[in-house]
Image (spheres, rainbow, N blue to C red):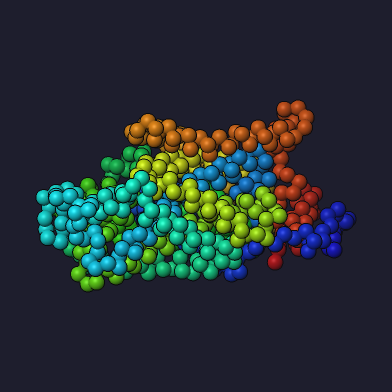
Amino acid sequence: MVTFYDVQKELPFECNFEANKVNRGQWQKPIEFLLSCVSMCVGLGNVWRFPYVAYNNGGVGRPLYYLELSLGQFSGKGPIKVWKCVPFLKGVGFAQIITVSYVIIFYNYIMAVTLYYLFMSFNNPLPWSVADESWSSSCYLNITENDFACNTSLSQEYFQNHVLKAPNWFNWRLAGCLTLSWVVVYLCVIKSVASLGKVAYFTALFPYLMLICLLIVSLLREGSTDGILYFFTPDWARMLDPRVWYRALEQCFFSLNICFGAVLMYASYNRFDNNVYRDSMIISVVDTFSSILASCVVFAVLGSMSHELKTPISELVKMQGEELAFIVYPQVLSTVKVVPQLWSVLFFIMLFVLGVGSSVSQVETILTCIREQFPRLMNRKSSIALIALTIFNICGFSLTNNSGRDVLKILNNYGTGSAAFLYGTLQTIGVMWIYGCRRFCSDIKFMSSQFVGLFWRVTWTIVCPFALVVIFIFGTYTEVTAHTEKWIVTMSGWSLAALAVLQIPIWMVITTQSYTGTIKQRLEQSITPSEDWGPSDPSHYYRWKNHRILEKEGTIPLSFITLR
């Protein structure tokens, strides 16, 4: 039993640390946290989504990353429980979890297609490099033989007519690969951060090795330098197009995983006095480097294709997503003269590892929330993971039929979209305006002995909220007017988006109704931090509680300010 004392009087906070401590888990080494964040950032987002704007990921990304890391590390809580600081906004956490679920489902589908290509890469010759009457038409583009009579390549026909098209309604090949990808993810998250930290050494470092190798191979092809020059040459006319900046910011959020809950979750497993400012700067710089490296590889490949196809790079650069990963890259790799199978295997291993790095962070975010909502399950991590991932696997089967591409579009276009900007807006308003900028900065100083400068205070309090509101409104308008899919796809997409976003007002009502008194009193109570808000570790919690009282009284001993 430990009791804290003021200089003048005894404070009323006592705690049996061992009795109250919950074995939540922690990163065994600080480097494991850094590598896990890097693995999450260098994931599929930098290769799959909008590689041509990936390098523009500055803006509001870095301040929000710092804010999320600080909030997660200080509280030691996941995306839902962290809102004990402002219970009124608890719905933001639930909305984030639903949005992350959408991302997980289509990410693992991409991993399943990647696995199928990986297995097929062991064939000689590569299946998409030679015509097969079961899936190829009589007219196709053949780079190897310099035949450009048609606009459809063999790799495109292989992808559309063989990989995605099921002999019957259900594609058992992709379903098997999907299940296998979920098995890999399960093995990574089976022991929460204890296993994630070890996996991160591979998922964070291997992709860089492969990206560098692919860049070297691409640079050896004629026309590759033209592609890289195109990448680094700004198009000043398009710089005035707000849609370009919106896509760049969207990629920033998706690449850094800001406002999806994963960053906050990873930080919640840190040591309480970890240097969060240093880590946020390192990770954001590494993410920028990763985006530039991945984009250089992409544009080097597009440059060589432009040279071979006699097609302007400006036309090829429009390709993204599945076209880029499963049509362009396989087509180029099939023309490598020295052991194309080896390069194809390495490329798809890299793509799969990128998917694992992204997927495990999102899965662990959901599992953390489940364990926090039901503390009795805290010691049943493997069982909870098995049940949750089995459910996700079953949901993923909706993508492995002949309508799977429509489902993928729904999840990709509507499942995420501008929702992250809404979550970011409410997060900055909730923490900076309601909880209080001064109080939050005081918490950071108590946690890491670091003073938060004026730049960060102004950015968090003024710049980010107003910028995010404008971006969210513009993004929502753009999405409403841009999509021209079938009405059933559009309706399904907006229904999924509404399911996530409506969690916010629903939980506002539920939270307000849980208090007693007049409407005004209930609102006041709902925006007041809960009694158990604070660091999750009892020793830090009671130390912080006493610190808050002493801070109000203006008598803070040095021992309370410096925590080691």
